[in-house]
Each structure stands twice: as C-alpha cells, then as structure tokens.
Image (cartoon, rainbow, N blue to C red; front, side, top):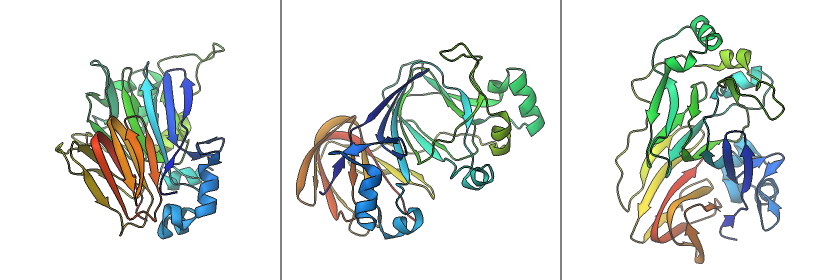
Length: 299
C-alpha cells in the first residue's frame, strides 16, 4: 500500500475525550485493515519509517498523534526529558506540541512559567493551591500553536479542541488537579516528587509559536529532534515532493475535504482523518479545500 489509514481509538476520560489517531503505545495500538501499527513497523521496517529512524527507534513507532476534546480543565502537569525519564526508570520522556482547532470562544490553556520561581517556591505554591498564579495563560483560537518541550509545565483548559503530536510515551506527572476526585471518590494521584525532578524553570516572554498563516504553501510550525511539523491550508492542488526525505510522513486532517494521491494511488482526505505515508513515498498530491498538518522525524 502507498498509504495507511488507521482506525482511531476513542478514550473517555474524567475531563473529556481523546481520539488516538496513530499510536504504537502497547495496549493502545491503532490498526489498519486489522494490522497493528507495531506489527506494520516490524514487517516493513525502514521502508515504513526510514533508514535513520529504524536505526534510532527499531520496531517502535516514534510518534503518537491525538485529537483532544477538553470538556473540563486538565490537570497541571509536566513531562520528563529522556535523560530524566531514564533515571526514573521510564523508557523515555515526552516532548509534544498542540495545534488548536475549532475551540470554544472561552477556551484557555496554560503553557510555561510567567514568573521566576525556585524549586522550593514551586513546592509551596502546589501545597497552597496557588501554582496556577505562576503559569502563563492563553486565550486560544483556531490556528494557535504551542510547543511543549519536556520539562515545561502546561495544561489544556475546558473548551479546547486540538491536535497533539508527541513522542510515543505515556509518562505524565500530575502537579495539581484542583482537588478533583476519581470515580471512586478518591483524590486523584499527584506525582509531586517526579514532577519536581522534571521541571525546567526557564521563563520565556511568549510560549505561542509565531508563524504567518498563508494559503497554498507549507508553513513550518515546529522543528525539534523528535518531530518537524508544518501546516498547509489549501484551496488549490499541490504536489509535495518527498523523494529526498528519509522518514515516514503523517498528514493530520484539520478541516475541509479533498483527495490525496500518493504515488498514483488516490484516497479521500478530510478533517478528522489521519494518513500515514511510508518512507518510500516519492510524492503526494492534495486536491480540494483542506487544511492539514504534516509531521515527520529527521534522525
């Protein structure tokens, strides 16, 4: 096949829903025609992910793609770097990014510190229920993009609907959860020690990714060791050349509809759909009125 469309996994959580579009997380693997993503990697190896990526990641697919629909505020949380995760006995950390889709007018999120605090002040603010006072909060709209490197405190707020691209990792350390209780009436677990070891206390003036939206050309959003991501907003046909790229490509439909022709094979492509192109792909032609993210890994 010249492309792979996976059956999403819908997860209902205390705060809303997640649709796992492309996942190789053990126990939560997406499938295409009955074959799991991990089995697909084992079968196709470098032909699927690229030579350098296969040397780097082996039979583990390196990215997890989700759509997140937050009905309530998510917990204030942080993810460790790979190095810190290894020290804590975890296989890897988590760097991620968000692209905001059609969210509620009141939607907000937290990303990063807005003031300098020490580790001791952090602990006092968590204990005193004031940690949110130290965080940068953003009202969001469609097209906003945020990069969340491992170590950056963050939280998605109620009313946010967004696409998330992340390392294949489910390591999340909950810092603060507004005193919420689980279905059994117990306070939800916090990971105070692990989180304290993971936080990067750097303060930046702005945590929103700066880019200029344009029609009919790719706009780079994020470039990091774990993924490169661009956004396309098309109302004219476009052919994208992948002949020199040593990586798989994931196209994440945000809105609209059209068609995708991959090395001569055509498939429909619309908002809410995610398509994986193998590393052997030479070119992809997109037609219609469609907006989508393109992400891949350069090792």
